[in-house]
Amino acid sequence: MPVPRLILLNKPYGVLPQFTDDQGRATLAELVPVKGVYAAGRLDRDSEGLLALSDDGPLIARIAAPANKMPKTYWVQVEGVPTDEALEALRRGVTLKDGPTLPAEVRRMEEPESLWPRDPPVRYRAAIPTSWIALTIREGRNRQVRRMTAAVGFPTLRLIRWSIGDWTLDGLAPGQWREVPQPPATPSTGAKPPAPTGKRGPVKPRRTAAPRSAPSRSRSR
Image (cartoon, rainbow, N blue to C red; front, side, top):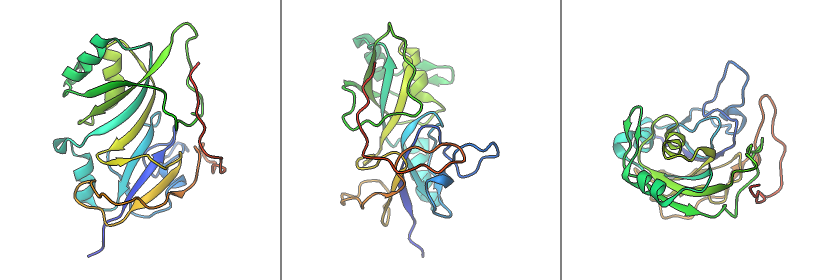
């Protein structure tokens, strides 16, 4: 029986989480030249970060199925500085149009040291500060993180998925991917990950991204 393939990709901003698009927008096909793999779950075009892909249906289901409640952690840049009350509301769960969310884990964080510039840059309002939180959820509703932060009064400006279970973005620049050999039933391998593969840097529609230097820190203004 063939061994399932599992790929971890740092999806750049502006790339659809699919391999084809009839509107000519950037897709995974420009980043991952591997046949027969599909995204396990969603990561919107205007979101960045970790996306798992596999050619194994049961493995995709284990990663993406809401019933499995696999934790996913996001680095979230929000408009304003969340209050203690707002963070506590996220921890308890907030009510959205499609019902209440499960309790989340959330904490304030500094701007990540390994943060890469976004292309295009985030548009800020000069009179309003921004800040970062780390938010962990165990659901996968459409645009859930953005709706949760908006519900407590702090809209999301930039959204980066840092981890899925025990898998993380560590060592992956935007557009880079690595393959996890012989993926187990859960993402707790305990093994040292293989070296990253693939292109560096974000891609634009109908254009192959040129290599770029190591990610540099982008500071909010």
